Length: 106
Image (cartoon, rainbow, N blue to C red; front, top):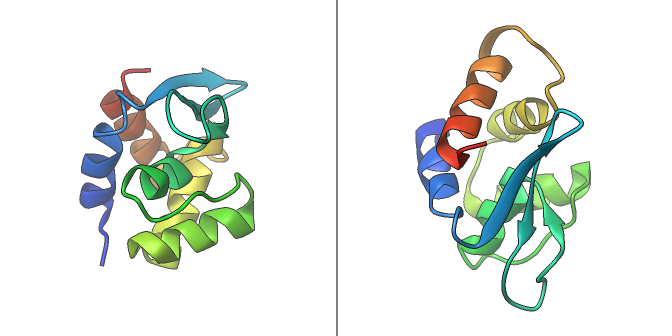
């Protein structure tokens, strides 16, 4: 079972493999290596790809599949998705977004 802390630790290990940025309030990473070099990933699909659990698209269905592969709960997947897109500026999503940006250095 992946917790928020484990997710953030796994995310921190992706800084070498992705060029992380914030575009239009959305956190995205461009892959620097492998078959998918140049493709854009969000934090959840990037963690799944970097842990060797497959490559998924940046849509809701892809995130759900990637979350299942890495052992994240549906609540964590929804929180990460909301934090990535800055859907809310209140509560857990905003806190998680701040932690994600801090870990990625963006």
